[in-house]
Length: 335
Ligand code: ACO
Image 1 (cartoon, rainbow, N blue to C red):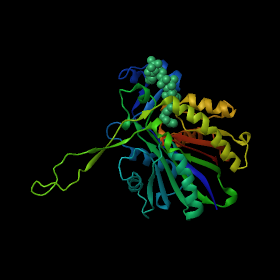
Image 2: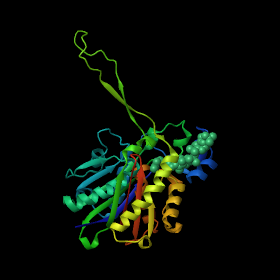
Image 3: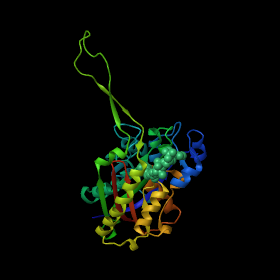
C-alpha cells in the first residue's frame, strides 16, 4: 500500500514583528539578527487568536486543495509542543473542523522534529492501519515560552501552523520513498523548556492532621538553548540522515528537485546545503519572513512553495527536521 501528499495549507498570526520592533524591547538590532540568522520578521499570537484557530485555518486550506471533506478525514495527527490544551490540542482542532465521524485525533510532541515524525507516523497509519485520509498538522506558538528579555532566544522564533493531507493510494503511486529518524535524550541539556514541579506547602488533612503528602504544581521554564552546540549537532547529523533516507529510497542527491529542511535559521540552512553540495537555487527557504516556527516550519514553507508554483506536481523533495530532544530525521517525498 502507498500514501501520497494531496493537499497543503498554512496560517500565521496577524501580528507581525520586525527586527526593529524587537530592538525596542530587548538589547538587539536588525544588523545582528539578519546577519546571524537571516530572519527579518516573525508573526506572534496575540489577543484572541490561539493556536487552535491557526491550525484549523491551515487544515481547511489543505482539505480544500485536496478536495476532501472534513467528514472524510479518518485520522488527525497534531504535531505541537505548545498546544492550547495540556491534555492535547488535537480534539479541539477536530471539533472546530466539524469532523462528524469522530476520527481519532491526538498530539505528537517532538518540538521542531514534530512534523517529520508526524509525516512518518501518518504513512505508517495509512500503510498498516487502514486509514485513508490522514490530516497532518504542524503548529506551534513558541512565543508563549520565550523569555522576552533573553536576546539569545527571543529573536529566533515565530508562531504558525501548516497542514498536509496524506491519502492512501496504490503502491505504484507511493509518495514517501524513504525516511530516517533519531533521538538522543542525552542532548536535551542543549535545548529545552523544562517542566518544574514545585512542592506546594498546603496543609492537607482532616482537623489539621497531615495526610502525609505534599502535592506538586507544574510550571514550565522558558526555552533555554546553547545555540552553538545545537548548530554543531545539526550540521553533523542532518546530512547523514538525508543520505540514509536517500539510500533507503535508492535515490541519489542529484535525483532530488528540492531541499526543504526545518527553517531554524538561514545560516543552518546554508551550511546544510553546502555540506551536502546541494545547489542553493533548489533550496526552499522562507525563514526571513517567519523565523523558526518549530513544527510548523516545514509545511509552512512547502505550502508557500507549492502555491507560488515553485514546487510542481511530481517533483521530489528531501526534507529534514531537527530540534529539542535532541531529535532529528529526514524523509524523501514526492509532491
Ligand atoms: N542581538 C545582539 N547580540 C546578541 C544577540 C542578539 N539577539 N544574541 C546574542 N548576542 C550576542 C551575545 O551576547 C554574544 O555577545 P558576547 O560575545 O559579548 O557575549 C554574541 O552576540 C555572540 O553570541 P553567540 O550566542 O555566540 O552567537 P552565535 O554566533 O552562536 O549565533 C545563533 C547565535 C544564531 C543562535 C547560532 O548559535 C545558531 O544559529 N544556533 C543554532 C541554534 C538555533 O537556530 N536554534 C533555533 C532553535 S532550535 C532548532 O530549531 C533546531
